[in-house]
Length: 267
Image (cartoon, rainbow, N blue to C red):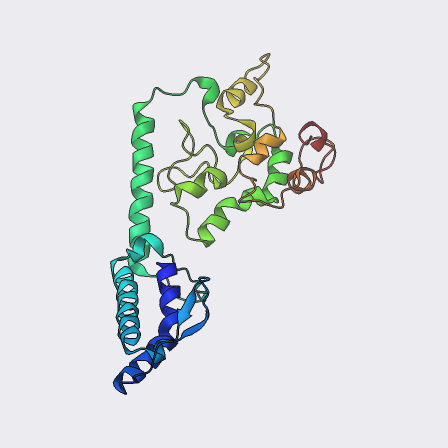
């Protein structure tokens, strides 16, 4: 269609002139004009009444073909229109959209809950206990955790109104979607925030063993940079730097300020 439109646009001036001259019934002998764009000699239509009529007819056909092509074209299949609208952050939320999102997120969590209930209970070494079970042996580490950013993960989610968004819960709670892990704060709030078990794995069995004399508690899963990358990916944490980020959450003997323990985690 682009070629037809271009041809029509090129012939518009000629069409207008020919229409005026046809009304005046100009009669002159035919003559040859200079070579045209197609390489062929062109007649000076203004000197030939028959050529004028033929040119007018051809021009009308070209215009009709262009109009028909425009009318028949499926715009939805060939045309894309985009625009950027900046919304004032102070603008009130649309209640209808809020309700629709709440319904969607609630249904997603309900679906996940049903799927978890249908599964076999997690074995003892895959059960979550929550940070309260860690305090008796790891009070210093829990105290340092409480001053770090992981302890505010749920708060940040709440400030954004996304506490029911399953896409966010995996990185702002502990064990979301896993048997015994976080699912719904209204039912169980023990696993809010990014707690110890978010990185070290389920530790209920570890805590139980620690209470028994002469029993060496089972260890947690190794923490590597890939552990961090599960949430600190390129989309959600584009400026992630392993050493610097570990410095903000460092804990354990010899690392009260987050130093000295990153060598086993960062590559």
